[in-house]
Every structure is written in structure tokens, then in C-alpha cells.
Image 1 (cartoon, helix red, strand yellow):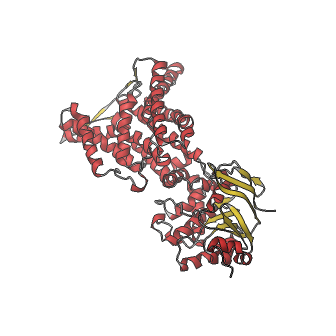
Image 2: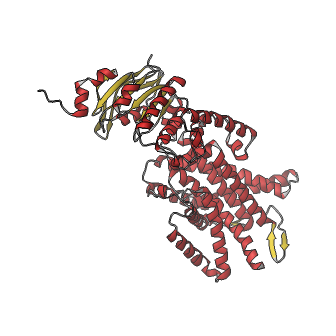
Length: 256
Length: 307
């Protein structure tokens, strides 16, 4: 059974059709990529799945539960984690706090415990801190744990955002351009980290990415989106040689 | 010299009220980017609820004959009043602000002003125009240190205020809700994706802010025991100035600026004729804001007041 399933999803922004008749079947354990030119509607699809927008038409199911009409925080707690293209970090909070924040719903103490600093509160905080540190190590950012997010190198900020998303224990992780703005060196490290996360956490990954090499390396299947419609879907090899994809990316090939 | 120290003591007491109220403005602003202009009136409502609770407790003592000491009644009054008033804050958030969360900020600001007017005139309609006098729960004693006179009430007011501020500080810095509030002040959008509902954090913030205003209302009633429905307006505006001076959304800044406002006012009245107090005090603050438009701890990146 598909872990994440989108059926015939269409979305309009005040008359402008952003996504048209979109379908997705994400099998457990897979890594699937979503590519397409700027403005094709890739991030809109992420926003629709994570509940920031509600689709005009269509159906979304996560692990058999319908997601339509649920608030983003509800969908997140049902097992959907995501990162953002433009890094939504909390600039003046520490790296450790970011990940602890993501463990919010796993912290079990009351408002009064917090005001008076009871033993229960300390115990819970300690438990979550050690869990958070473990995650930071996985993503190679543990050495920054007490620094403010804003002071980190760019690549480390991306890894932190991913660590934060993983702290919510997602079944499906949506990555919105995980390599945007990265140096080739950071890029290679990101490939290693995504592979590791995929294996260690047994998480299913759906990612938007511009760098074809990166997608080809990691993904089992790739969808190509142009003007809100999927024009091609298949294995990396099929996509690489698909004339429609080449046209969308490079313009029409002259037939000589 | 004695007079100088005496003024410091008075300024600490006066600043406590501003600081406690300013915290509420700042907390709400930091998460929702709006100033709750009804906050001064929540202070007034808190003082009236405190009056009701204290009267009820005194009546209980008179009826049952259980001899509760005054200080115990006072502590119970503060705790019960803070609890009740926090629901006033939750109600205002739910009815007044939540439906307007996506609306332009100007609408939300006007909503605050309207809620304020409703609270004032509603109070007037229910309780009438007569002023109430806050029951004196503890005997006033005066201690003398050198030439400085300190009443037990002043010590109590400053002590309770500082304790509440300390508890709030720890709550904001250490607890998961405090973390969520700080996170919301930096990026609103990413918070729900951690599984955190804004509709839980926002009411909690209003509740805490209102409870602090209620504490300020009771402490104010102890020092100046006359209650009237419009008592929250001027004090609320001045505390709002303190919240801006501290830096929009900064908790520490609001507390410090509240005390500073107390100092500036008291010392302006000491040095200059006291009728000129506010003219001089607020001219000084205007001057400070000219050079530090973001206040003491305001962050330049998030200071666009979205009106």
C-alpha cells in the first residue's frame, strides 16, 4: 500500500491554475524526486501536501488517513516532516533549541511544571536534550549545538533544518531543494547524509531538486512538472532520455 | 542623598506596574505581531476581579470565623485573580483576535481599541459610576533606614513583581511553550510543521499576559486603593510606551524599560515641578527613541509594524 498518495489534485490561486490533475504514489522506503523549471508549481505541491494550502480539488492520503482539511500542525503530527527552499530557521535560537522545539509534542509536562521548574520538567528536558544531541550528531551539526542558527555556515543551516524535520519522527520527509546554494563539497556531503537518514530512520523521502545529477544519484523514480502538470514520470534513465523533459529544460531540439 | 534614595524606592514601585503590564504587550507582539491595545483595560478588569475576590475572601472569613491572616488572603487573592483574569485574555484572543489573524494589522489594532472601550463601558454599566475602594488586606507598616522610609507594601509590590518576572523569564527560556513562543517570533510559518498548534500558543500567551496585568492591578490597588473603570487607559498607554522602548517583542527589554519609565517619571517630578512630570518624562523618551528607534533590545529584522 502506498504511504503517501495524491489523487487528481488541482489547485487554483484566485483563478490561476497552479497545479493540474496531479497524482503521486509514494511507496514506503522509496526516494522520489520532483523536478521542473522555476514556477512549475513544485513548492505549491509541497504546500498542498503539508496543509499550508488546501487543494481546490483532489485527495491526499498519508498512511491511509485523509489529509484534506487538516491544519498543518495536525498533518505534521500524523507523520509528515518537511524542509523549506528558503530555510525557515528561527534565527536567534540555538541549534539545540531548534531540534528540541521539534520534539515539542514528545515533552510531557504541564504549564505549572514549567513555571516552577519541577523535577518532572527537568527530567523530561534532559531526556529530550539527549535525543536532540543524538540527532545533531547524525547530521554533523553537534559541534554547533550552543550557537545561534543565524551564525552557522550555509550548508550546516540546511543540515540543521533537516535534523529539525527528522526530530518530529516523520514517516514521510519532504525536502524542498536540499542543495540550493551549496558548494560541490557540501553537495557530496548532502548525498551521503540523505542516504544515511534514509537507511537509519527508515523514512520515505520526496524531494524537489534542481540539480539533475543529485536527483539521478538518489532517486528511484522522478516526476517532471511543467506548468503544474506532470509531463513525464519514470526511472532516472527514462527521464534523462525523455524528449519532453529535454524540451522543457533546454528548449526544442532542432531536427536536422 | 536621603531624598535621592527615597525616590529610587518610589521609582521601583512605580516601575513595577509598568513592567508587569509592558510584558503583556511585548509577549503578544512577539508571537502575533500585533499590539493588544485592550491590555491596559485588562489591567483594570484584573483590579476589579481582585476587588471581588478579596471582598469574597473577607466575607468568607467574617462568615465562618476562620481567622485567615491578611497576608494569606492577599496571596490567595493574587493567585485566584491571576487565574480568573487569564480566562479574560483567552476569551479576548478567541473572540476578538483569532478571526482577524489573516486580516490587515490595522483591523486588529482597532479591534483592540474597541475591546478596550467595551470593557470600560461594560464595567461602568454593570457596576455604576461610583468608585470602589480596594480593601486593605494588610496593615501598613513603615520601616526607616537612615532617612529613607520604606513601607511593607512597597517591598511586597516590588518583591512580587520581581518574582513573577523571574518565573516568566524561566518559563520563556526553558520550557517548551516558551521555546514555541520564541520560535513564533522568528518564523511563524515553520512552527506548525513541528506539530505545534498556533491556536494553543496564542491563547496561552494572552493568558499569561493577562495574569501579569491582573497581578499589577491588585498591587496597584494596594498602593492606590481607588478603582475606576478608566484607570487602565493612561497606565496602559504608558506601559505600551515601555514595551516599545524595550524593543518590540523583547521580554527582558519590556521589564527593564518599565522600571526605567518609573525612574524617569519619578525623577522628573523630583527635579522639575511635578505638574510638568509627564511632559518632561515623555520628551526624554522621545529623544531616546530618536536615537534608538528599535528600542533597547529590538531586532531590526523583525521590527516592521505591520499596520
